[in-house]
Image (cartoon, rainbow, N blue to C red; front, side, top):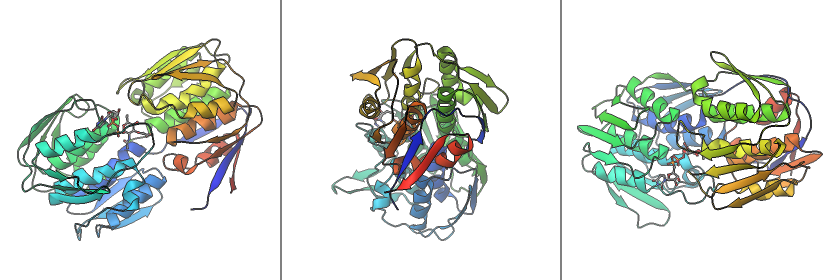
Length: 419
Ligand code: EPU
């Protein structure tokens, strides 16, 4: 892929409407889950991001026929074949770990490369492994680049997660839907994406109760059939645009949102002093400066999402006093701070808490270390004086559909340049 940078000349007010896309973190689990079906699955409302394209090509590596057009994907697994997936595609994104649970459910065996993803500090998958083992799998980790997971039989089990993990909850569900008997996941993640995956699997004929609570009960079935499923709206994409709108003042309307899913952010933006108006499936924002200083602590759902911690941070430079941001999910998710400092931001980090002081940002050359750090730098660029150049933008394209065009349509002075 040709390398490019995103450039932004800050200071333009944003005005207009955008439609929010389907949720990345649902899509990246549901695409692998589709391989559990014995006939055609249709997914609607997919985001147009590179993570989706990578997962589709992983399905193709298993001899699955796929047809991806814009936001719709048809998956035909009727001629599926088990194959090893120890390649660079697996390493290019974190969510490739969902191929483990899905292939274990379908074939009782998989050989797969180790998942990559955003560098947010340590991201172990011990709880996924613990779940697979409890269902009867053995894991061979002797290769430094791949893992072999195998079970003679998958048998339902009681699994108590040591920590609330979205990935482990979903991955265990994917294997347990084809296990014999009942699996109970305790201390399960309650994130909307977990519920979306459960809704999808239930539509295929799975028996899952309790998704969205901390106890999920799955009774295995022998057969999962095709289904048509609409992916839920992306609460993190919506939240990122809400932060952009709030930072740049004027009026922005976002369509295709689920108000409950964005509530933790809505509450925080209102505390900052942003005018947030919510309708059925729409949110309208109007930023009013200066903001009030606030404290933010990320927590599992329904707490404030770690994925919005970085995007909301630039708004805190516009507050009337110091604010504090604590990340309890990824205590090292602070690589954006060094970049914000290059832009004149008075920001420091101690352990898992950033202190953000009122500052006037100026344009600079900065690096997107990960997806949401990229969103953070775009917002910083939108409010900075002068031109900001963002490098490493492939991280941003992994998770945001047409972000540059979308912001242009709202009036931002933003463009890309090849390097
Ligand atoms: N954890 C473990 N062991 C495990 C699993 C998780 O120690 O086996 C720890 C993690 O290191 C982390 C915490 O538990 O400290 C929560 O991790 P979780 O498993 O919930 O995260 P994830 O499933 O790997 C998903 C999203 C992330 C999002 C987190 C938290 C996907 C593909 N990724 O990751 O999204 O930050 O949940 O909500 O769904 C993003 O979209 O930018 C992103 C990073």
